[in-house]
Length: 476
Image (tube, rainbow, N blue to C red; front, side, top):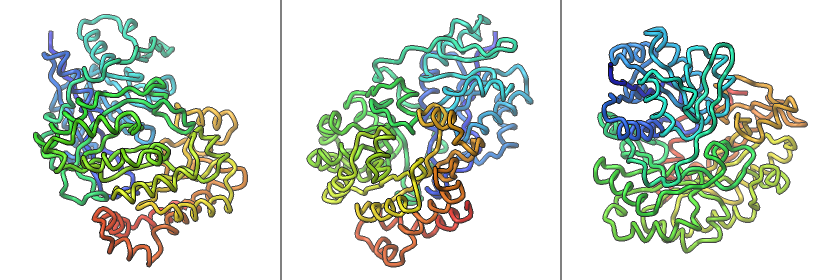
């Protein structure tokens, strides 16, 4: 019997123009591939990263054909769901016998819809994928029925079968290191130009999964079972050290949805403070404003071990909207968080959301002023987007608020819904005005470009060079 040949595909896609020119490694695929490689050593594993490999759809078709796989798998968020489906379609045209699998947040929440709309997809893996994928590969290789495989969805005749969910992995330390060796020929191509320039080695690592908060616009806590599970500080430090010393990783994005500074700040500092790599890395992670504001001592410790950049979701200055979002934070915490980061020479990125049901021209103008007043180093404004899997999606769908069902536009740069008083076009225009207000000021731009902070200089030059304001204006 032929051994399994598994091809993980990061399909061609358009990157979020707000972040400009950047190329991230396919972290989700690297994590999955490493687990499959360890558990099924006889399997032949490949990762095709169309961005890094410079493959268009025709190039992807040729690559899949040349690898002659038994299974092709892609994973994605809502905005690139159609790219994953197109990957499956191309695969089936090459050989209908190749098994096509999709996974990730979007398909975990839309298995029935996706399998009905895209007959080229054979299986959707829901939720945490490692053990489910190995079980599915083994089952199909042994020509057994898939109905006993937990955490999958598939068609049986005219119906979609959703098997019971798979229990979560309790000890994340048992996971292998991501399979960076499978994309080693591309590692020098991964970069985040806006943040650190074109030639700084950029890599991604995962320290935790999930979140124990319940923000109504967020898919992540729901996708990971409503819990926050973390790798041990030692495991995280070991992985940071490994990426730096083995692959030359300098700019390292800790992609956890919530850093949880309260619980991990001190032990991670203790693990890294004596390691040589701390002087050669730039850590970037996201954290809550209240977590930052109440722990200036831990921010100082994290800066000491290479933390240069923290992203935090400020969202809005309206208390009622924060309550609607279930953020459990106050606008006052945003002021304190920005001050703490500034005092510790940590670059601050504040995220804001416009387009909630009660938003008006006046409330969004007030948000713009608030975003200036708290003085983040960079502000990113987004349109409230009803991602499948969120509480907000269910409410919006039930009330008929969703006016755009094209998932390609679910990138937080397109206005998907009106508010009670603003049309979608008006929300889109307000989003442009937000960027114009923050980045359109000549005085502010000169100050940014001439800043003593290297990251701030890089970002402001990037935002000007990428014509972000003009791109947002074109969306109106």
